[in-house]
Length: 126
Image (cartoon, rainbow, N blue to C red; front, side):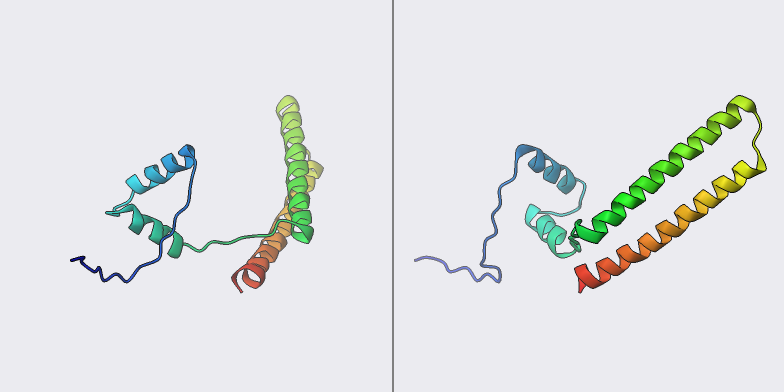
């Protein structure tokens, strides 16, 4: 006589991973207090929000512009620091130039942050 099992969960999920991914999953599981990998996987999947962002079009253009702006300002600051360290003098015009560049970068970063937030709220979460 076979015994019937009364299960709430009767669907199976199966997926394959490579050895590196399996080692990472085992490492993360070992850092938790879960008693089974089933609990760990379910918690990881259902309790974490997964956000997928399309990095094409206007958003990609903004990212490139941001990266370019940061690179240019970093190069400018390095040149000014090198000049100040070699000469030992910094001019008021240089300070104003640095201040203006940094304010422009901060404004751009603020606007970009706002666009990213709007994008995530409107495109990803909705």
